[in-house]
Image (cartoon, rainbow, N blue to C red):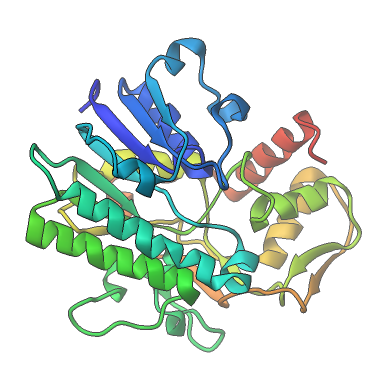
Length: 328
């Protein structure tokens, strides 16, 4: 499919930028649609994903809401990477739940557009979320490795995480119907806690690393500090998707995870060790923490790709970027 045409919705966001650069490197001409509500304008893309002048010739920019753009002419694409969404860290998920529900409208508009009109339908990658998994499997009393079959549309569903989880679960349901009823070749990805050097500070990984890099004492983590997440480096996310997208059945879901549980205390203490900070680590119980344990079963993903970046390596990458760019 190299040398084809790709559409990346939300292509100026943290994940989208990575896909745009990688697809251009693979020979695609990429159309980016992003309203910049959270993404960065192309001229402000950071070092890891900045496009060279020759690469910029292979990108078309549509700086507007994807729903507005879809209402215009219908270009033909070989690949669609759907990342456009209202996103944010835990504070946004819990503090502004109705804004996140906008994702329902975005997904419905996109899927209707993909299955309408003449011509072949593009290969579509739908990015769901680990927030779609039942929160009853992520408690202090009962926490398990979350495997793909634990979301079962045919035999009852658990309650996902807040409106963001509900919107992504609904998006998966739409993807399944687009495949079954309209023949759309769509695969579903459930990323866990992706991180990277150019990620926004509303997310925990770069924020904790920055607190350590600033030699704060104590280094504060939110909630109990005992809550655990499955942190996976963004480059590993992208490579896992590219390695698997043509191997999965239509409407099949795949976790993007390491299978390793890291508590927020563990993250801060490991960062202290990597960076060389001897400060204390403490928690702020008045800050939200979300579910107690969210860790993905990577077994299916490992059939296509094995993550290459360890937690310590990831901390070093993020810290070095923050130092070099004056972010401490």
